[in-house]
Image (cartoon, rainbow, N blue to C red; front, side, top):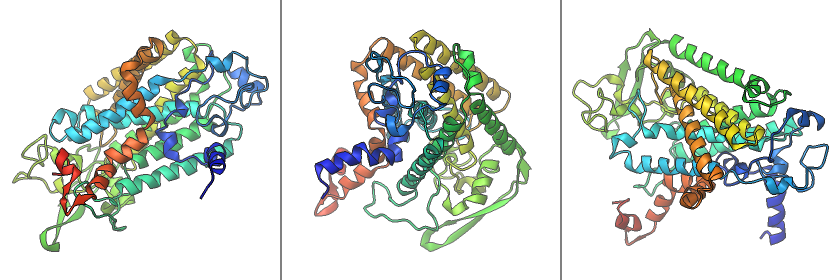
Length: 476
């Protein structure tokens, strides 16, 4: 049994160096600190030998030890530690996103406005994933404010992303069979390879590498200076968006087939006719083709969102029986968190990085708010323009217009929360959201993934039906 002293040493030493990745991606408190107080200039970084600290010493954004900033050649002013403060708005934003996720999961089946859009278009539910990715990006700028050893920081980022990816495999790969089943286990020939946490892991890793390696040495005095200092990160985002759009509209999608299991272990085969380029419908898009080719159709999500489309459900926009003339693709697997569409998820995370840079480089509330509102409104305007000309907002495909619309909305919401909570001190009404934001991963695992309901369901009186969930209406 590990003693108290040993446990404390692990927490303050080793654990800080190999912290579980999910605490980084959906952190409780470390990334919610404003690093320093005052405008941070690049010339200060150059005087310290180009070093800008590390998550090891800052514990993912927490202030460094008193007396001297990590990686700084000169001691920090005596008043500086007192000026550091929590960025509570980031916790609140994360908590609101978690609450929205829970509402969508529990009420989406009954209220179409709270469910994901069957294909093109946006609903409230379609903002959850981009909001999380945006928050990850903001957090990363605080986590990697100071990186004395870039190679070591990169290794740790890879390890953390791998841990998060593996956690996603366990939670969403099919190991747990749902709230109505006490069994567990997964057939490796049918395990779902991608998912929510897997997508976050991929986006986190690429964004972290950009934040570690792709920073300029330019001074930052105005908002436009950020474009020059972080031009390489912006270039990566533009390249990813361009490549994704070219692949989405330029790749040839051939005819394809799939099989599903029927009653009595029978197998039904279906053929889907495509032979097209640039199709963004459910059946013949390049996103699905790439996932089927690389991941394998047996490893994709088996309850596709397009099952609620007008072609596939007589209860459109809700789930329902297939219409008599339903097309052959209605029951085909499709992963909404697939490989190709995750390219644009990385872009959302990179956009969050740029919003985080404004926190680091600007002291005044007014400067931060202006530099957040300008790109937010610009992205929203561009998103609606692209949607108007035919590049539709689409979550399953994670299109460019969808990326811009959700990132712009995230920027506006974050700005509003920041103004209320951190500027005007509107704290008490937001305490529940702040708490949820600090424990986002725990809530996600226990509630959103049904781990807690399944555990409670496993404790019953004489008959599995006589459990607590039955009496509160969840397991009935």
